Amino acid sequence: MRVYGVTGWKNAGKTGLMERLVAEITGRGFTVSTLKHAHHAVDVDQKGTDSYRHRAAGASEVLLASGQRVAIMQELRGAPEPELDALLARLSPVDLVLIEGFKREAHPKVEAYRAEAKNPLMAPGNDTIRAVASDTPLDVSVPVFDLNNAAAIADFILNEVGL
Image (cartoon, rainbow, N blue to C red; front, top):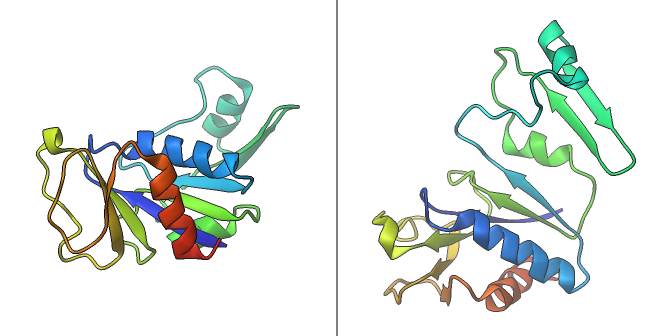
C-alpha cells in the first residue's frame, strides 16, 4: 500500500489537515485509510459496555461488530507497542494510507506548522519531510503550502505516491 504521513508538534494542525486530506482525496474517488499514533493512554471503548467488560475480564482481543462498523481492540498487556509495519499489515488494501504521527518513521511526510504554537520546524534536518503545510510563509528547502489548501496538498501527495 502507498503510505504518506502528516507530522508536526502538538497544536500544529495535524488532525484538521488529516481530516481535510481524507475528504479531498476520497472525494476524488480514491480509497483512504488512516493510522493515528497517540502518545497517551487511549481507550475507544466505554466503561460498562459489554466489550469493555470482556477486555477487563482479560480478553486479549475483542472484535466488536455491528451493521455499521467493525472494531478490533487488542490489549498489549505489557507487550511492546507494535511497529508501524505490523500495524499497516492489519489494514485492508486501499489506494492510500495517511499516517498521523509516527514522526521518527521513514515514510514520506508533510509537516503541519502553525506559527502560534511556537514550536520549531522539523523539516530542516529531516529528509522524510517532503513539504510543509503552514499558516505563515516560510523559508525552507521543501515546498510550502497553505495549511488550509487541502487540494494543493492532496495534489502534491498523490503525485508523490504515483496516484
